[in-house]
Amino acid sequence: LSEADGNRLFVEPNVAAVGALANLVRERLHGDVTYFNRNLHINATNVCEASCIFCSFARRMPDAGDAYTMTLDEAVGRVRALSNTFVTEVHIVNGLHPDLPFSYYTDLLRAIKNERPDLHIKGFTAVEIHYYAQKFGMTYEEVLVAFRDAGQDSMPGGGAEIFAPRARKKLCPDKVHTEGWLDVHRTAHRLGMHSNATMLFGSLETLEERVDHMMRLRTLQDETGGFRTFIPLRFHNEGNRLAKLRSPTDVDTLRTMAVSRLMLDNFGHIKAYWPMLGVQLAQLTLSFGCDDLDGTVREERIYHMAGAKTPQQLTRSELVALIRRAGRIPIERDTLYRVAAEA
Ligand code: V47
View: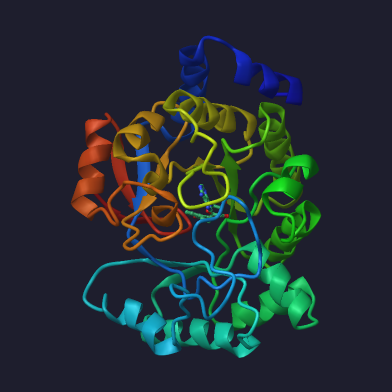
């Protein structure tokens, strides 16, 4: 599909038809299968130098009342607490802390691997990699190789926001620019690492800028083939400087999922990240192009601080039941979509 086709899909009045087209592609690729995993999230610090106007999680100053930075022991304690629990993945995303040494991150990776060698570490967004490269005078490759050697297995898709310069300048003026974000992922793919990509939708971007975002990802994926999953992230408006904007409607959300599935023909998976959607809407997305619900999650901070009313975690049996109720077949996967256990 061309960029013009993408724009047309966003304004086509018959949203059900757009959804049906996306469902066709989704079922061609995955049949009724819907993936989920058992994972945990660690946000080791909320101290962040960046001033993204949509963010409710970051604290600019390390001494702000509710700023926190976990000690290595505290962070590893999150993993240790699950030593008798089946989990396959830890998702690590942190603020851009101005004072932590490079060794904080490599020690964190090593300590988690040491505690649970079987756990896949999907950690550090392109924004973080770019920040450390600048701060410590390293190339993207040097940071990624050091992290990989310390235990990083793949990269999450965060920090992409909206690539179009007009919107990006407003949303996140002082974090990695579009070319940098793409180049970190290009480098990771070259080193043999897989990664995901996100899009923050429904704040102040235009519909054309959403399509532009997808086109840029599709082009890089044609070049490298290293992306696993695309995750459209629905904007939440509480506790940030965009509080006067409404969050996107459910219909807009379903349409955005569907257009993503249709435009990103070279992405294997479209993920409906349930903590930001709510369970019922997440179920509906499974007929609008999505084939993955992420995981059990446990303790999510970024969305809950922005007003998400979803639970902090879902159990495996809750995930299985909600996928079955949506008429799909649940498959528990690992991060790389290998079957971890059949539900
Ligand atoms: O990059 C921050 C987003 C992202 C808000 O790779 C917001 O599997 C909406 O990237 N409203 C981080 N969104 C989370 C993320 C992610 C999540 C789940 C799975 C994966 C994966 C990646 O959260 C940020 C930003 O785009 N975000 N604040 C907000 N108020």
